[in-house]
Amino acid sequence: MVSFPNSSFFGSNLSRMKITDTNFELAQFDNTNVSDSLFDETSFTLANLHQVSFFSCEFKEANFSSAILVSVKFSHTSMFGADFRKAITNKADFASVDLSNSTFIGADIQGASFIGSDLNNVDLSDANLYKVDLTNAKITEKQLQSAISIHEALLPNGTFAHDRNFINNGQTDCNMSFSNNWILHKGNITAKISHIDPNNCYFFLRSYNIGAIMSRRVDLTKWDSESWPHSEVILSANMSIGVSIQLKVTNSTNDINTHPRLNSTGTNISFALKNDIRELEIFIEFNAVSGQSSAANYWCGDIKLFIIYGKYFKFLRVIPEIPLWIRWKQDGMRVAGSSEKGNATNQLDEPYNLFIVQDETMIIVERENDRVSQWKIGDKNGQVLAGGHGPGDKLNQLNRPSDVVIDKRTDSFIICSRDSRQVVRWSRHSGITQGESLINDISCRGLAIDDQEFLYVSDVREHVVRRYQMPNMNGFNVAGGYGEGRNASQLNMPTFIFVDQKQSVYVSDTKNHRVMKWEKDAKEGIVVAGGNGEGNGLSQLSFPNVVVVDTFDTVYVADVVNDRLMRWPKGAKEGTVIVGGKGQGSGPSQLNAPIGFSFDRRGNLYVADNQNHRIQRFSIE
Image 1 (cartoon, rainbow, N blue to C red):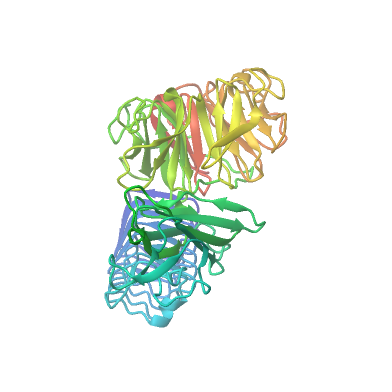
Image 2 (image 1 turned 90 degrees about the horizontal axis):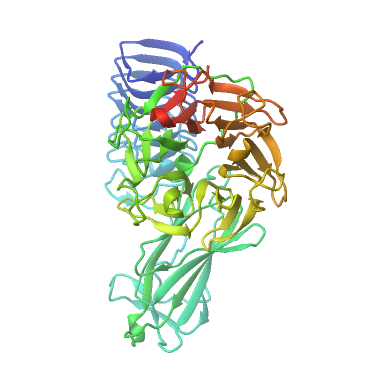
């Protein structure tokens, strides 16, 4: 077998090839066109394909298992017997493709087109068919029923499929008994035909003076936390003013977490499912409002609760698993920004930090452009996600931002707007053009979110890292907080932070030229990198910034003034230079104030080369 593992194909045009018994495992294909070619026993396992077009190709026993396919098009192509087991596809186009005898077991298929496709004997067991188009596709009802989800899918007969509503009488039953499903805690409720929707019954308040509270429990046994660990619950309802719905979540230890309320001004409640969630409880509350004195004015109906499987997988930050023998090519390649700084969509101005999410999208913080943008790997232009309206304190502005994280619970970005001295939340929902303040009067620099959805913020003025419980934002110190200093209990200008699965906090103690680790509930930290004074020796750091810790507890740190990135294995007294360290400059092997960096899922390294106004990618050798 011929192997091209971890290979990269950018902007390639490939034609009339015959590829036999070839391995493209973990390869990267971007903006690539392939035509009139044969792939015989070819493996694309764990590969990433973005904006790839296969035209008039033939695949024989192709293996795309666990691959990521984003905007991949298969035109006039045969894929008989292909293996897409546990693949992730987003907007893939299989229209009119012969996929017979292929398997999509456990695949996450979102926004794909199967218009006119031959899906005869295709195995869709436990697959997620979310917003797929099956118009005129050859597929049976039995195949569809084997999928774990077919939510908002367009079926061959032209109708839309929806998963079972977990609230099976969400549209209410006029003859229902509260003892069957709902519990009435207070007041009096009746179910009757609605003037809002004459085809369905709604809940109506019967006693204006005391209001009412009702609830019901929802079992989540259908959700498989091991196969679909990154899913989302969405609750929607139609309701009048004065009515609100609240979700309470019970985990395996019977802890209860209360989520924000849904009322008549909102569209839905959504939050990420975690593997310890066992049960949901829905509370509907009817409260009198001034000027609405008739009980008939208070109603609620069309209550729907669905699970969107796999929704958050592509937005999760990659935490790499990198063996110590891995090395990187010393010449980098620019993957974002141009030869000059600027604020155009193809330019960057002092990129401060970035991270790579699972679908190979770069989320970039630009300090001098006062914005957060996203760049798809291989694209020449970025897209502004937050800010971009000049520096300022208005809700649609950022002021020299320094860091960003994704809050899966609310599907939003949390951003440190450094010079406005606040932490803000910016929704990822389309059409949102401004943020909201979460924390004010804080000299923030770095952010992190742990698996329990606690928010961590470094404060360079108070020399402390604080942990906040969302959404009420109660905070307490988890590192430092004993004044400026270099003792084990102190920090001096803590900038960037990393939190592992044990809630240990790693801090770039910048002016002490070291990285500190504070285990959960510890009163003192331990040095895990540097700590031998400022310098350029292998045991030293000079103003360290972004820090990332892999699954082996190896510390990776941006050694800014030394223009290099370093790796410090667990317990090591010295680090090794992995890229840079060849003098300040703009050459492919040089860096100029590298502040931030991130890894993709294959371990390739992306560096925010601040003063060169670019993102450099260093591929694994």
